[in-house]
Image (cartoon, rainbow, N blue to C red):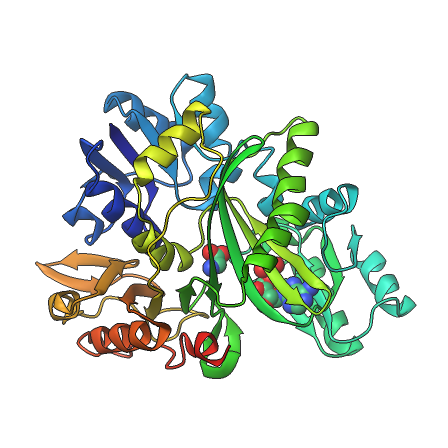
Length: 425
Ligand code: AMP
Ligand code: GLY
């Protein structure tokens, strides 16, 4: 099987790395990829925001199966385009991708199908939002979310009315997130520990994958600005068999049945962002793709062929059983460029990756790297994910941090507490 992976981050590096070692895979292509990915796959230049160009690559290369990493091409309808051309692809249609690309759609869908989530109100104008705030139907802190895709930055937790009104102004009047801020969702703030859960779905069939926990804030102890994710571990010790059963019965199953009934069957990776509250698991958000950095700690644990699972999803023959995983927990630390997440200073030389990768149980996945004059340099905010595997969380954390200690670039920032939550529980 010849497989094309769309994307260029550490999530796609983890996918490519896993697929490249599998017996049914003859070749892996990645569009556009990165220098780390190039060690396992043939990288093809491409723009992620051009589904037509990606289809042309798949046709020219006679690719058997295409898998999409990031949300942008999905929200632009890459799956519809491939399907119309008869090219196998794993991912949701543009209509099904609305579970991620429109928070207003996702909330209304959950309400229609009685899926547990925070109480909410969708506001179509700044005046409507000011009125809803003035009505006092929600206590503080109040969560405000731009409706559309905003790279994880469109959510504000306002501690009082003044900061809630500021957020309305910034999102709906000043349009900080562009068209993503045409609508705003106000919602109740949920209390509990966050966890993610992943399944691979084909309409109403689904293979449960794994749980994980992300670390979204830039600084230790969950302080500072929200980021795309500064580290993760898998599995989540909070995801007991009982909680997992509830997530599948009360959330995943109704989502897949509901999307099918509404005429938009869901295919691909479904990422359920959860708050584990005192009254049970509730949905914080859906993503219609694998998580980053969650994929980097889930895929190295997968103890069967990813190519087989993906091929089964594309051809409608997914097995009705959970995927098989190694028992060992994995912990991943994101090494970020200085200035991230506001901006990122890039173009500085990276050293120590070979020494880090030689450590038993360690993996280094590239996100934003590039080659300049034969040297590896930083090329964006989240530069690398360094993963450690261990017999327990303690060992996995130690392996990851020992591996990361070999890597250097100017201004490198990372959290020092990734995985600590797993030790505490
Ligand atoms: P989202 O982009 O919807 O995942 O939101 C980003 C982050 O904001 C989440 O990972 C949570 O940490 C936080 N968040 C979002 N919605 C809520 C909520 N209703 N209650 C508490 N925290 C939330
Ligand atoms: N880890 C969060 C995300 O992939 O959106």
